[in-house]
Image (cartoon, rainbow, N blue to C red; front, side, top):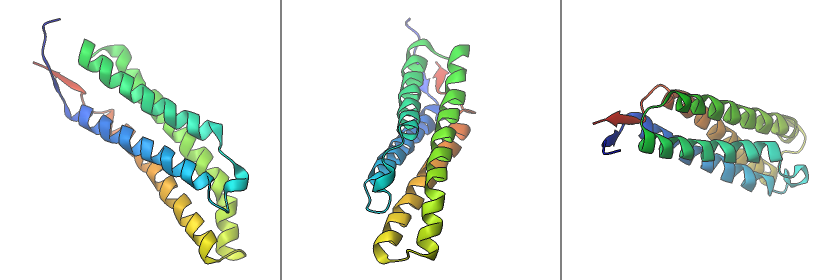
Length: 144
């Protein structure tokens, strides 16, 4: 209990992953309110997966700082990666037809702005997915 633990590079990368995932969620919810995509509503799968990924990453950081490196904590980044991948796939899949329609038949400034917002949100989801994969290779805490 008196052991001191120092944060590792994995801690910093996981915090960055949490931030990017939270930004992805914010941008997704913002995109759901744009004029073009508002009729689709909020996909609870995307929102729930992104929220669960952020919560699990925070839980992993807290438990790692309290308990140190434990084998069961190594499964959390895998679950977070799966959740983020499901969210990204669902989000991208729901916007493909709309993007094609905007690019061909419904091209105007407002729809293009909505599409740009969707593309940025999708890119953030993919970046969050890449970050969770990268951060899983690094130690969250260093035993002192």
